[in-house]
Image (cartoon, rainbow, N blue to C red; front, top):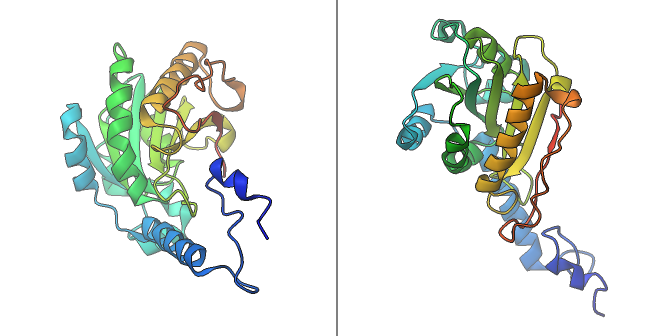
Length: 255
């Protein structure tokens, strides 16, 4: 008997209408599930190489600083989120107080694959849109969580900090990048003080469109002097672009 949901598979990557073999899944969708689960685990557990990312970003022509969080290794980082929110003592001395408009921070987060694959195309599209902005050196942080951008932005005296890092992988999205930004970054900021453009990847919100969304939101944040729940997303909808299979949106960052 044909599954009545089968026609919906043309509209979603969700695992629906997979069929049955007795009381279980057929072999093919079961193996596909296990493969997706393995890819998600690999994205979380893969070691991050900041030097390799710095080399990938070299064509952008931006100064780069390599920093460390207080998490000494990947296993500790996954068990102790609090350590990923703070810079290591030896990294703090590299940050000099200034007054740049924007500090861009990159880290592995929960998907090393995401930042290694999506950061370059996103920044390639975003940086030309920031013509006229004063930028701090790109900061690449090993084992960083979202909130480490607050300490970095505060120590640099940046008006806005922008954090690019791998999001928690889903079974169909091991390479999704998140972009979080905060106006007036400083230690003690909460998730209500920042915004996020999420699911940045070719199958979600393509980097070129994400760059346009981010630029519009950052410009509004700088003009109004605010971010987080006080910042409303009034940017034009992007769903009229035929190359965008799915559209992300600004939202308050999750815990």
